[in-house]
Length: 170
Image (cartoon, rainbow, N blue to C red; front, side, top):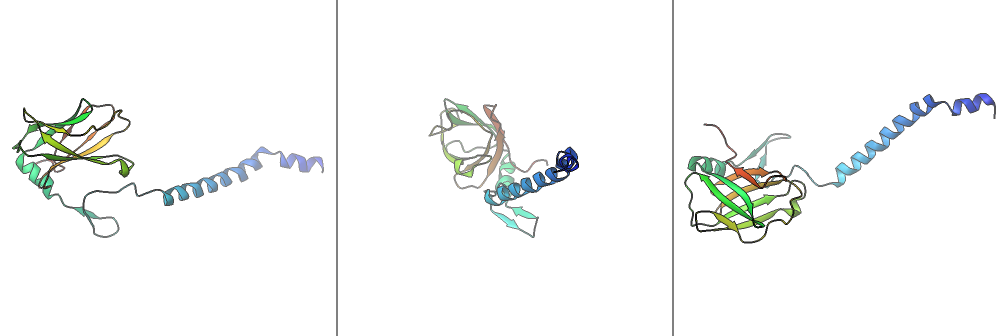
């Protein structure tokens, strides 16, 4: 091999011109594989009616009912269980409630907690919720019939969250 051919092989610009596009092509195939094999991240538990490629419509009737009743609640951890404290509105304090806790990434970790009425007008879950908080949670609180609904999000570094109807304003 001549000295000139060896210099061409050791030229760093040639490595950049060929190497970088090759790395980009390989990375795009890896990204495509991950996108195809992973589950649908944008799942919704609500019944959604698709009206074309992008437009979606969901039933906001329970949220409208919660707004009409003026409902607002605080969800907090209490001794490893979840407690619901009513903050405003017309509550039926003798009736049990249903709290859906949605994991932000893995829907297999979603839980539905039955909330029992307690003396003092609060509700407490019958089972333990979580030993160590490792992620945020999305909560959806409703009566057992689902006639109204409150929603909220509890970041992992907080011990409570305010739940309100998804419909705001006047």
